Image (cartoon, rainbow, N blue to C red; front, top):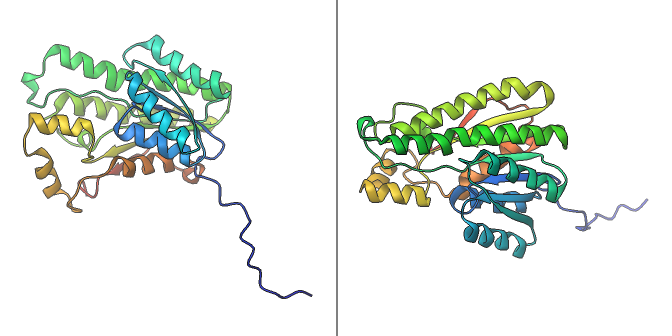
Length: 266
């Protein structure tokens, strides 16, 4: 019998977290969405990127392809029901199925107290940050049912949804409602094998935060000082949490709102 120790390293590497899956990502032109699209592709998914920003989408798609991943993009306005349905359908048209979706896209409003939120800003943040994820979930559930049969959805919420939010009352309210939609969807679709979760990021270095910092100088410094880890997150760190929740490694997790906040709400 040959007892020579083997040094063969030709075995295939472990498959990626999302190997073989088709993923749909909204708000994928920049920030957390772009980081998620790149990560999902590295983890083996074929990814359809969606956002309103065609040039940004094309750039991120090009980065994924240059790294050997499979991706395409579609322009999508989350406030337009027909646009949302068409974007989800495009994933099925391109890749033949839909397995997972990350509803990340959102818009911002100027920070300030409740009585200074304009009706136009309130309506806009409702249309994009609450109605948009609802429209997307409806389309995604239909696509998963019709193709993969089972799957997972992650909605991007915010730690600002977990308590009163004096600076961003409308934004916080919409994100809290997203948490409720997430939990309700988990109850509804769990019996058929569709898991629905949310992540609640804390301070993350995105263009959105930089815009808020411009309106509220010192915001980033103040939030960083309040964080036990004394730093902001990189978009890639938030994307990692979404990837895990979409993967089969979180197969018994549904209906949760996972804080990814460096302990800020501990």
